[in-house]
Image 1 (tube, rainbow, N blue to C red):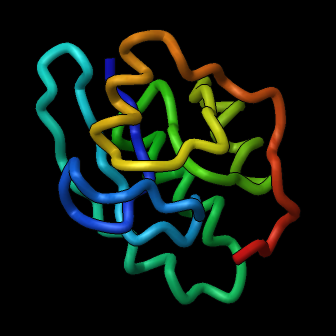
Image 2 (cartoon, helix red, strand yellow; image 1 turned 30 degrees about the vertical axis):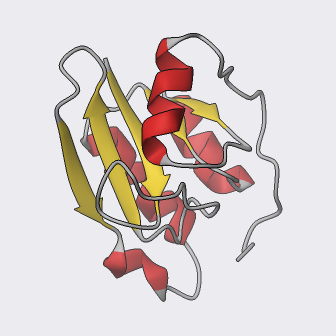
Length: 120
C-alpha cells in the first residue's frame, strides 16, 4: 500500500511538515516493501492560493491511499476525499516513526479538515 507523508526534508529521518499544501516535500512510501520516493513541492510553496488543491493532485497522481500530515484545509481535504485518499491529521515527529505507527494501526483517518483555507 502506498502512503504519502508531508516532510520538512528529503529522507525518512526528517520531521513531518505540519502544512499540507505548502509542505516542503512529500515522501511516498510503499508500506509493503518500504521503498520510497521524494516529491519536491517547490511549485506550491509560494502560490497565493490553491496550494492545497495542487498538492492533493500530486498525492492522487502518485497513487497514495493515505496521507499523513499535520494539518489540511477544507478544499484539499475534499479533493483527497473524492479521490478515495484517507487523510490522517495531527501527526508529529519523524517520518519513519509515522510509518511505524501507521503499520501498527495506531493512526486513524480524520472525517474533516482541521484548519481554515489559506492556513500557513
